[in-house]
Length: 526
Image (cartoon, rainbow, N blue to C red; front, side):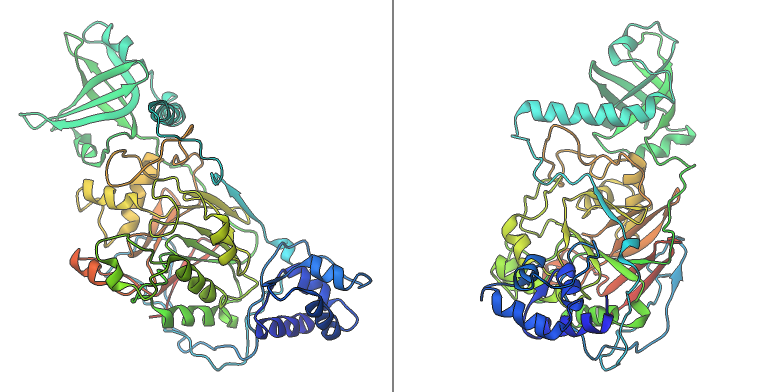
């Protein structure tokens, strides 16, 4: 379609306070007189219309000669003078682990005033975005005992299937009946972990038939793996039965894990995705200037290949999330917080595809998996017609799979594991353990609230190419068995509450992933 006509239509609609479907803009631009066609459409629509849709154009212009892009819906973004980069310094990582000391410096915030803009005029048919595992509208759990049984059986069946082919496994009851000294193996849920008086470790595994104890000797090479274990994760153990067959001495342990042979998929063209989270609109510490700088940068030629934006939860600050939160709120009404977030979202270029999942500050149930937002909130956040899906969900962008999970369980992983293996300064290392366990929140009954469902939606069935989380407000990325793990920081300066619990956030960063190479560039806007 004529890009100049489209730009004029976009600018005029924005100036009058409207969003529009991309197909509606396409048809208006294809009209013989686009300006007159736009006026006819605006005369016909009702006063309370917020989004100009294709049917509005068809009603007002039944004889218009229009085309179709088949590209879905994307609301318009403002046009006119666009920003230019203020600083051309950037750091690029190819996936090596990043510590706080070695954190890429990124770019300085862009400054408004330039006249050029990003040109994302590539054929929209080249784009593809698919969602897998969205459980919105699929929740059946009632909290009954049977629901808990169902979800744990599903976890054991599906993750156990990844382990049973590696060992000659037996049910717990069958092992109990085997003679002392036999070689045995079992797949089960970790039911209990405790140390003995001699400093050894006793691990109790549970399967559908019962439980059986396994003893890990403290002087064995793999003894340090016990420090990585969480209750309720699925594990396989091999060993030798004691003489009385009452316990087995562990010779090896196996996790579901990401195969070392995993080869990530990449896009067939140079295209980028921005991975961000934890915007926290409504907080007094929301960094509006940094957000605006990010939105401005997305309008520049430097960002022309950024065609996807993935937001991993906590769009708003929420209400009543932590003690005395009201004292730190700039907006006290939850719906007004989402309305303000929507206004900030409108600053993102309209030709960027957006995917959002909720977080623990958002107005959805706290228990995971979290369904996507309800219809009222979706309507408020309709700018750019984002894909709103559950937490977690798998998103595939042009062949590259991205597991999006807000990340509440990272607190538990960091609390339970030794600091050298998981800490807040290197949040991606905690993510490695979730990949190893093939589950985003393995431990039940701790700080992470889990909802029992017919199936376990928190299992990492398929190995993702990218694992994207937020929640901990720290920036970090690295590769685990060729899976790129990214925790994307936040857009909220340190609150009094964060100061009281010693959280020093990494705010105003936007990791940008090249989907054709899985290289990462960190843009800094604070």
